[in-house]
Image 1 (cartoon, one colour):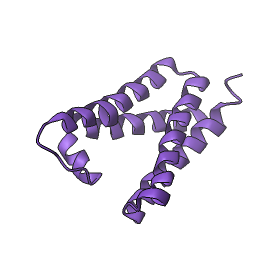
Image 2: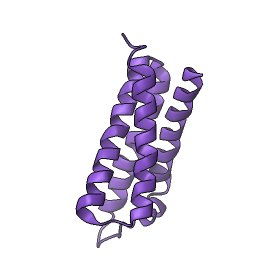
Image 3: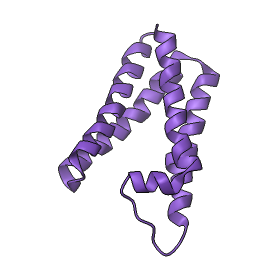
Amino acid sequence: MTTALNVIAALLTISFGLFGFLAPAFTASSLDLAPTDSNMGLSEMRASVGGLFVVTGAAVLWLNNPMAYAMLGVVYAGAALGRFVSVVLDNPPLVKAVTFGGIELALALWLIMANINRAT
């Protein structure tokens, strides 16, 4: 069961990244980000919200190692931390921010807790 859930988490990571990679304008709009007078924002979406997650998820699947899955959890923990700090400091749309943060936190907890002991 652990292996199946790990693979699902990695595939979700790739799926999330594909939105930013292939549809940066849609992703930016979903995240309430607005374009400026250049396309640099689209480049950033493809890189940091897209390609980074696609390649990370693919690498975790390729490595197929408990420590790799645990480190993916650390990535999600960082995202959740940033999201919840934003809720306190930035006053984003609460439901959207807590939903995204909750997904990130759930993935972080699963990936770290299920894999950290298996990695040693």
